[in-house]
Length: 155
Image (tube, rainbow, N blue to C red; front, side, top):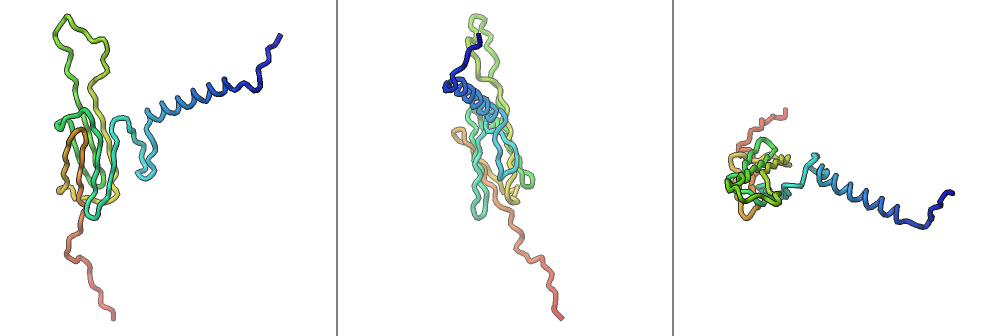
């Protein structure tokens, strides 16, 4: 005898949508999110970034909790700022009587490249790091005040 399902029982459908929602959330965490204005795929798992534009500079603020100042390497080339942070966790102690019951803190390396919207003065860039927050100030590139244009006489 064939058993008929209740057409008004939506519990199985609800469970399916719940599973799909969890899978999409997991994929989003693993793959990152689309940054339409930057035009690149980025992962927000390890480094959240804000970019602010002021009259004469750009300011990039990045969250790097758990890193030391010496763990951070910054480079700027053209219109690309690259932030790399690497830390090594201390190896297990030589104490034979102790062992980890749970170990989630590991060595970590994160990297993020940001395409800047304007040319910046690489030599004038500065950065500070305090309480897990990196702040990078990038002066906008200013063309020399000399007028390099060529005057054309109208005849």
